[in-house]
Amino acid sequence: MTEWTLAPEAVDTDDACALRRAYYGDVAGSYWKRPATDAEIDEGLTGDGAERLVPPAGQFVVGRYGGAPAACGGVLMLDAERAELTRVFVRPAFRGLGGAGLLMDLLEHEARALGARRMVLNTRLDLLAARALYVRHGYEEIPAYCTGPYMEIWYGKKL
Image (cartoon, rainbow, N blue to C red; front, side, top):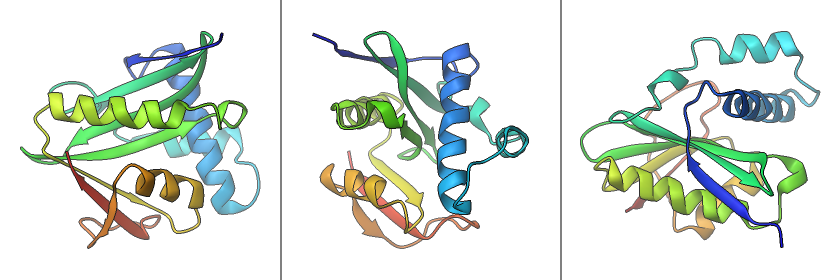
């Protein structure tokens, strides 16, 4: 039986980089309603702050399904008690196999290990599957805690 394995991993490993590229291509492509080009993905990842996803400031996690890199996500400490959920992604070929829930559980565990008592996140209104995942995991809509061009709705949860 094929199983998920999830664990913290540096953002600059080959698998983590490939997943971050796939994540950006997926969310950018859905926003632009066309596939993102390699150049657009490169530009989007430049200066994206992923290097901060290391303890004690944050954590990055990679999920593998049957050994194949299939999912990723990160948490970033915003202050002493609040972490932000970021870059949550499951490759399309691996969706519906239970990885998203396992990923959310591990990311929340990692946030608590960093000292977070609350998790927050922002997303776009059109990312319906992601929003449904967050709600299933107990996240509720909250007032905006940050602003940006792709931030349309904010969620939070006590850990």
